[in-house]
Amino acid sequence: STPANRQTLPLRGGPREQAEYLAFFRADSIVRDCETIRPRLTGGAPWTVLGQSFGGFCTVHYLSSAPEGLSAALVTGGLPSLDGHADDVYRAAYPRIERKVAAHYARYPQDVERARRIAEHLFQHEPVLSSGYRLTVEAFQSLGILLGGSEGSHRLHYLLEDAFVRTPQGPALSDAFQEEVQGLLSYAGHPLYALVHEVIYAQDDRPTAWSAERVRAEFPQFDAAKTLANDGPLLFTGESVHPWMFETDPALRPLRETAEELAARTDWAPLYDTARLAANEVPVAAAVYHD
Image (cartoon, rainbow, N blue to C red; front, side, top):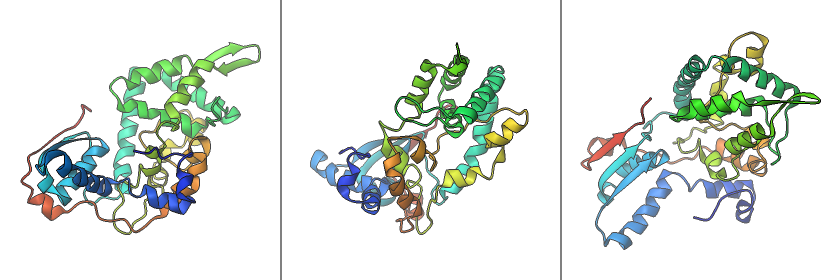
């Protein structure tokens, strides 16, 4: 589909009009698109869908709204909560993230001091990367998204291992470290992910209101400043989107007001029909990744 980014979205109008447009990138609109396309491709016959990650959310909505279009449904790593708010998701996620970080440090205990040293450096200097990305401590912590993949702990370890180089002015973050971090953190290639990451959970009249950021405050162990004031390990975070990303990332900065509009929106349609799902006769299989 047409890219939705800082360059193209102004064609839709201001932040409010952009948010209205982006509200059509949720499961309900995607399934309506599928049901428009399906009869033209299959002659009216149902088809099998494979839903990966957010595709699983779309698949469950499909089973709720148009099961007659499905011959079977396959879901990998993406079963949604039917009636939970995004807050519920993150309240479950942060303790799990903490366990993943603990497992990483158990594997690579030398990374405890390395992560603290990098965080202390960022508090003092807050470098601006070559793309204009501001590397804050919170941004550095978000590299914990790597821990969600099978090889992510090793990749994070090697990234931390080579973070610093010696220069005539003293230790500095290496160009190689900064370049890799920039590639991992920038949303230039996928800004839509950041814009609608939380609203895929939204239903009824409850705004998402920057759910991951609000819920993070309930887990003070993730506060880097408090951690560095003591001697505990720095906790990384996981797969979540925060308002500060729309300040640090030049690809997202022009879309901050649009993101605020989406976070404040309260007129979301319900996504899942529990009665219809309970009566479902479409064969469904779901798999989740190890750990």
